[in-house]
Each structure stands twice: as structure tokens, then as C-alpha cells.
Image (cartoon, rainbow, N blue to C red; front, side, top):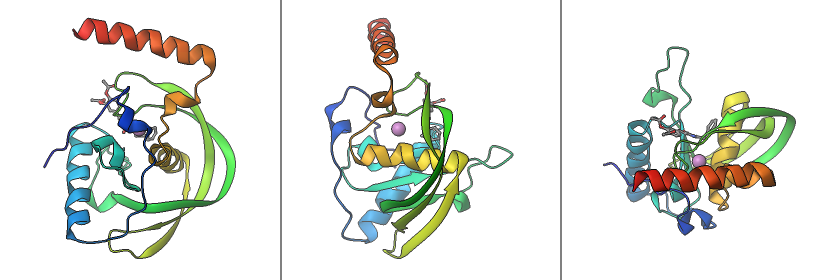
Amino acid sequence: MLLPIITYPNKLLKSISADVAQFDAQLHTFLDNMYETMLNSNGIGLAAIQVSMPIRALILCIPDEEGNQDASNILEVINPRIANTNGTIIYQEGCLSVPGYYEDIERYESLTLHYHNRHGVECTIEADELLSIAIQHEMDHLDGKLFIDKLSYSRRKKFEKEHKKALKEKK
Ligand code: Y12
Ligand code: CO
């Protein structure tokens, strides 16, 4: 089932999401629906709050060399915690909740992530480059932050101007 993706400036995007306590069939169906929704919108990452669910869950599916986003490549991340970080990297980010806007954002180049999978099993992965960037982008959503909140004053002004113009043109 496709879920509606909320977009900036919807105030729900500022929510602090709550830990997941039940790793049950309802959670599994929700994660399946998130995956379908993300692929349908050409996304590579989606946090639960982007579909109006304030829980600490996110999914990622980094395309392989052929650009395929196979279900076997999906990473479902629940109650995540970043342990170690290394270096920095700048990448032009986009977000399904801020369509049409891309900006260079600095993130950690690599990190260690502790999280639970859909069954509540504790997992750890080492991530670098695009996966590390995507994890940090999606984890920011869990704390009510968007990549545009990391922009300099002048870049944010530029964004607000472009966003206003885009909304006017849509009317
Ligand atoms: C690197 C940078 C950012 C992330 C977070 C995940 N972001 C996305 O998956 C964004 C996808 C996206 C897709 C859009 O739709 C199309 O391209 C058809 C889009 O739409 C427009 O720009 C109109 C915007 C964002 C992970 C890794
Ligand atoms: Co996003």
C-alpha cells in the first residue's frame, strides 16, 4: 500500500520520533508499505515520520551498479544509534519531503551504526560514503531535522525564496 509522503513545511516533520517497542506484524506491514512508497517515488531513503508515523524507524535502499534497488538490498533500521564516526564528506542531498531542492551537505564519511532489525534483533554495521550519508540524513528525520536546517543563513534564504516561488507556480 502506498502511503502519502508529507512535505515541507508540514510541522509533523519537526516531531521527535519515539522508540519502537513492539516488533510485531503491524510494524512489518508498515515497513513493507514504506518500501513500496519509497520505490514509487524514486527515493533511496525514507524515515517513518515522512509518512506521518512518529516512530524511530527508517529504510534505505542504495541502488547497485546497474541502478537496481533490489528488495534484498533493503536496510531496515529501527531505534538506531551512531557509535563511531570518521572524517567528513560533502554530497548533494535531496529529500522526498523537500522535492525539487538539492544542496551540498557535510556529513561523517564513515560510521558504526547499532540498530534493531524488524524482528528486534540487535545489529551493527559499518557504513561509508553514500550509505553513511543516507543513514545520517534519515536519522536527522527521527529528531525532527531536515537537510535544509543545516544550510547557512544565505543558502536557507535562497531555499525559502525558491520554495515560495515553486508553491506560487503550483497554484
Ligand atoms: C544521499 C542524499 C540523500 C539521501 C536521503 C534520501 N533521499 C531521497 O531518497 C530523495 C529522493 C528524491 C526523489 C525525487 O523524485 C524524483 O527524482 C522523481 C525528488 O523529486 C524531485 O526532486 C522533484 C526529490 C528527492 C540519501 C543519500
Ligand atoms: Co529526507
